[in-house]
Length: 437
Image 1: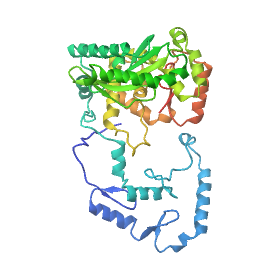
Image 2 (image 1 turned 180 degrees about the horizontal axis):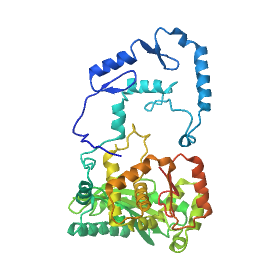
Image 3 (image 1 turned 135 degrees about the vertical axis):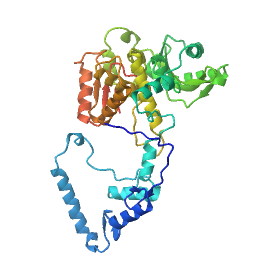
Image 4 (image 1 turned 180 degrees about the vertical axis):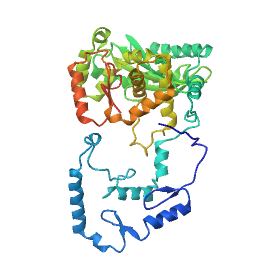
């Protein structure tokens, strides 16, 4: 596969859009020729939105539309379905992706989107991708990409790193000292701790366990008040000039910490948690923990359960070689600079999470035989190839349970029947028991 990359952010080519079919053309002459050849003398049927000659009144008859519908349904069932379409919805979405108005056909929906919302092919491309100037896609040789990773992505070392570490530990110590409840233990995670942070992005996750919580229900009730009090302490502290408080979630306090002369910063997530499974997770298999997690149907409780697994997520990624971590940095940077930020318009698009990217990258490296040295170009090609076949992805690691563990087999069977999304089964998933892209 040959990939050609262009500086798409420097050149903005004007295009001419056909109002009938939505295709784009480079000139008015090309658009005029297309219209005369494809659409001249034709109109759209108000019932089925099919394009027809205006001299065909018989098409408007109700009986003909009913016959066409029956024939289409019969012909559909006569078609042998391919494997990748067996578990996909048979009906095609015919509702507007902007205002949810219902239409009789895909063509009618697309025509409405173009006319009403100006949802053209160019608009779709802009919503799906948003190449930024710092994207590495302009580099085409392995040597250029290696240099880019070392100079632009890999976190700074030396005095800068030492000063950064000192300040991060300082703010973490302050959080522990001013936490409203007594702390039994704390777990640190995130890209900064795992060693996959980049020069322009770093996140730190802190899970604080306290025996003051008598149960998970008590933790659910008390956490909002605890986070509110901790947030007020941070705002009133001497650190406040270097903190940018962010929107708080149900179980975490979020803020951006400006570090080392404001040259860069870290995104913090502070999460209190009930230390229910500390003794279970300390030694031996974690199968009893997963059994309780599997039986839980409360999403909030599942989120609290899995916070205890942050330690094993960090250990798994942190054990990777430095070159694999550079590969993870490259993949994260590609996602961050080559795709548009989530908006109301592109909410239907789903991208893998940062942790999922780490797992897929490590899996591809293991699949290649865990080479010490490898090409980032070939590695990225393997990841892209894997992502294009996302419906067939099923990655497993048996580090914390037996391969024949009953809960694992049930989850695997359930996902095999669904076949609607790729699955990554782990022994230490921090977000949910089953990650699906």
